[in-house]
Amino acid sequence: MTQVEKLRNLLGITDDGKDFILEFTISRVEDTIKNYCNLKEVPTELGGTVLSMAMELYRMENFADEDGKQVIQSISVGDTSTTFSTKDDREKRLLNDYKSQIDPFRRVRW
Image 1: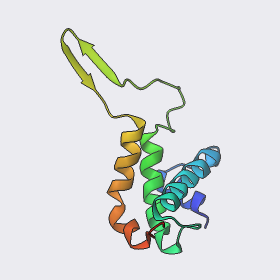
Image 2: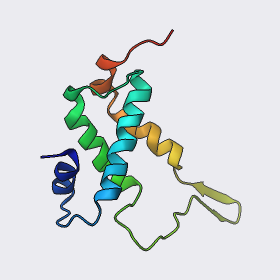
Image 3: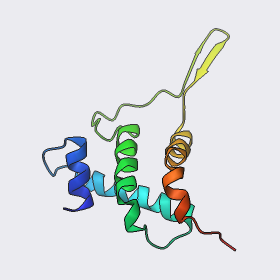
Image 4: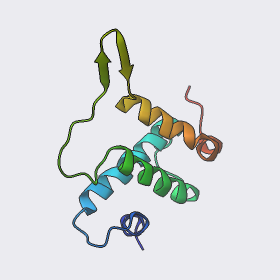
């Protein structure tokens, strides 16, 4: 079973219409891990972590929402302002949530 098929099953997607989005999500997660760990390939031991991170990224980015709705980042009423997390904050949080699994594979760059 491929990573895309596993991710599709974990997300409860029954058809293959979203395979391109799932492949893109897995690729983004793998790139994040490779850049953070300074590796050329993602270790096979991180296969489950890749899937978990891809599930979270898929949900955070609202890829399931096909309406193309815009996300509100800030609301101001009178002198009160509320700011919500941005894309950068979400990606940092995603990486931070899995650092304990990823850190053992990290290499120092000279």
